[in-house]
Length: 218
Image 1: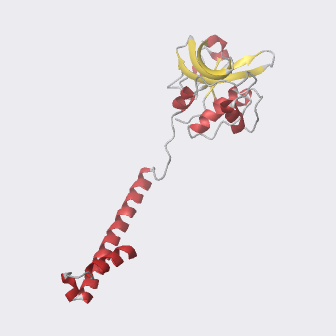
Image 2 (image 1 turned 180 degrees about the vertical axis):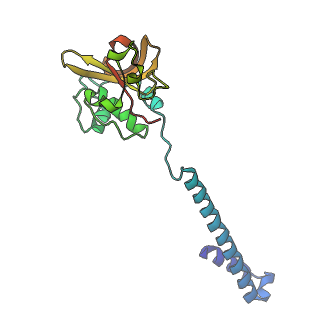
Image 3 (image 1 turned 90 degrees about the horizontal axis):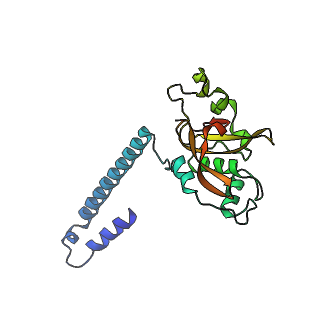
């Protein structure tokens, strides 16, 4: 505002300026104009901030959807086939680990983080299936107890963005996980990491899946 006032007074001091005849009145007019413009800007800014706050979108960064994130990672590969490489290191680092560890769960966790969800954040596959998060289990598939297959009885089918888990007999627990991208009751289309040293899309028979968890609150 000081710059505007100084420029205005300088222009009025130029030879031939008609406002030179009454410099006091000129200063008064310019001061009033500047105060009016400043007030208008202030009220406009306050109005914009209030509107944003009411809408709940004030200064909220826009995150990509979870499907956009994990779909965009298809094709990422390890550098030497030893759970390594720049992107794999980023997945593992998100969970506090260095290269060299199995990274399927770290990939799932990292993708959630990129989509704006702070959980899960764990590189251990079994940890992504706590009871309160499990929405589907193979032991209840085909039974009459459909309510135990989902937390939302109106939508009993696993949906895109859910996390599937594969039971590994040698580990006696869920030892691999990835994302559900589509589910038709017979086949599950997945996006998963740490398979053939890469992030890939594949189709798995539903009968091979042990459990499905949901970390996004819809």
